[in-house]
Length: 300
Ligand SMILES: Nc1nc2c(ncn2[C@@H]2O[C@H](COP(=O)(O)OP(=O)(O)OP(=O)(O)O)[C@@H](O)[C@H]2O)c(=O)[nH]1
View (cartoon, rainbow, N blue to C red):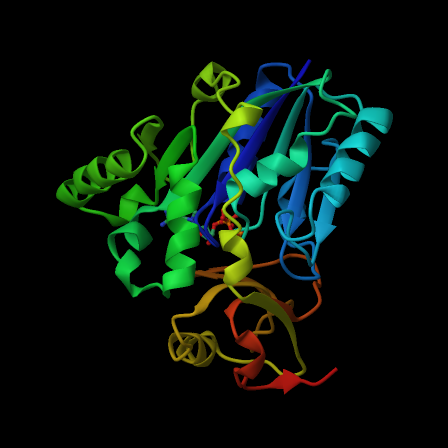
């Protein structure tokens, strides 16, 4: 049987960071992992974090829980047919309801081959403390992702005081008394903890809540034809409504040879120099992102 983990968590909470670290640990211990990634947005941005030797299937611009299980089922079948792996990690979009995503993984086609270990949810600890600021729909999804987890990572703990950290763990445990909670930075979770999860995610527990469907998240790809200074770009980002949850992509910066890698998640921006000439495009994910005006946007 191949072990299957479902990685869940709100937009920008740290799922890909966790994935990269877990893949490293799996490989160090001699496992052969495979990955299915589901991204909101047409650009396979996160998959660049997975190196070439790991079998990878992507589901772009849709969401496991909203398209039903067919695409995931097909991707798992293809992997089982063509790839040699012993652990499968499915990273859902931050907009997915974990139980509905898990439901998509159960299929009579491969029930005998997969051992579903459980749902690991990454929670942005700072967002947790300020969850009242989310719209009610986004908040319900955020809470559902935590409520249904078998293991919770209280991530980004580097941004909190000791008292805040303790408070987050206490409150998360109140919402989900059955899950193990670990304080983390950059989604670092010891492999042993994952391996200890044991098929607690039984089929009979599943009660799809359909909450993800009431949250009208959309993604928008924005291309740029001119460069910015980092300050002016950040100023534009700071002026965005709080319902823009996530931005990632490549931004042309004056004086830089290639567009820089840019990430935005819950108030924090991150820039990294890029050594390849990546297309100057970002993906913006949130509620009603189509109506937002963008400086320097190239109409396609
Ligand atoms: N300060 C801090 N930043 C973090 C931590 N974990 C992740 N980040 C940053 O948060 C941003 C989002 O991290 P990802 O791992 O891409 O999050 P994600 O959940 O995969 O994002 P989506 O797939 O877009 O929903 C990146 O800029 C990370 O570098 C952490 O523990 N502390």
